[in-house]
Length: 601
Ligand code: F6R
Image (cartoon, rainbow, N blue to C red; front, top):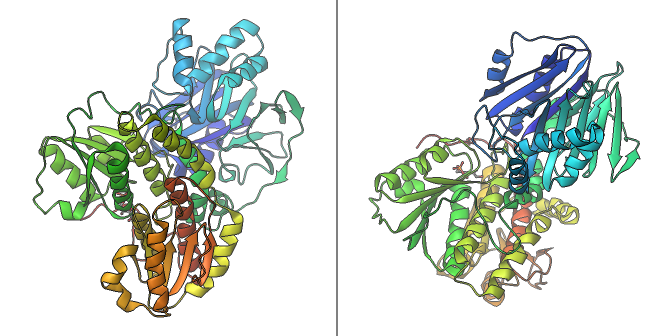
């Protein structure tokens, strides 16, 4: 996830771009860059790290003559966060910025390289500017060249391009990544990845939809869709910046829950192929001689680790064990060189996980990190990393990072299962995987139901979230979410384990949130819940099947694969904890006593 901005006008281009990027810095901050063009030509600056580095570097520049500018703040997906990979990317006479992932960039890059084009960066973005120049050299028509360029791109993108061949114009295209275009009363045009970048500048904006493209020139936005010219639907721009960063949602947590569908798609791009799983990031030989996988993490990431142990054993048929990092550090573990040590971390800075990783490295065993933050301490330490591509997570309660962790772990289990599963079973998983972006989309009807139900769960002496198999780690995660932001006591438990003690707590003030998937051990789970109902526990069942003993029922869709049910239930649990916290008047995004990145033991 990156942020992009664009500007056409008489104002101080550098300042307009930097101001816009500052509002988008939450979308990525491992490098940033700007390019401005006026009568004196094109000038560009790039800098690694936070925006302030770019500001310092460009401090000498100013231009108030009429011209154009584009800027970018980067969250690395392809290529390390360094200056060469920072945007804007340049060709012979044009510059481009891009947010998203060009899925077919390798094939396009190869074609261009075969034609003699030299690439400077490792990014997917650079193909856009070279394709554009190739077509423009043939057609001598920048608009047609841009149209042909975007017709070649597969994947998600929001992109802006400027070129010396048409110096007062910005070309734009949007497909799958956000982009807004706006205007003021003085003939200026603005672009941004979110309204936040345009507030205080543009008066009215148009929210571009997937497939939109066009160009802006002399205060006018020329919009096209599928070859047809369109009239942009302009609406007045709101003035509250924090509101704009939340993109209309009440909390960052809510925005992040709603984003899960699209970040899961990003996670899958270029990795879930037609008939196999592919990871560019896995070096040759990483799995050679490996007989066991040990997965280590904290908190929510630990729950993803626990769920993955079921997947590694069931799908990949490889022994898998799980460790809580703070426990692992001091248990004097026996580490064997035929073990792959996998750490999972959203932030990449969690002290316990980082130390556990260092211990594994010291023991000479191979390590792999699943992490959301490129260039973080954990990424730098591990032998190999698979990035989660969840974008920056601002809510302290982790949601979309967990979703992408689960997705990558499932993909990894399937990657390792290629020669162990029958072709039919393998295809079954692969097909189920493609359904997940749809299933992780928030169903508004269910959200409304959860909002209404939440009022019944504000008191009581505790919650038990229960499930079996992979739904047990999901139950743990549901309970953790509720604890963190509602400050109510909640436990996650394996359904079958309740009768070994916790059932003694059952009465009408004990709330049981029962995960009852139909594809996995339904009857066994049902019997466990009947035992709790018989002791008068209040039951909220989450299931596609109606359950007559439930006091409350949240109906999920009929699915064939347990992971499809998993992702659907995950969203419901996140919404439930959020709505309970809202009713209790808590600070959803910054719950008491917690921090987003736990860099202490
Ligand atoms: C819960 C939560 C924490 C983190 C844990 C590990 O919502 O966010 O439990 O999961 O602190 O953090 P990372 O994944 O950054 O290592």
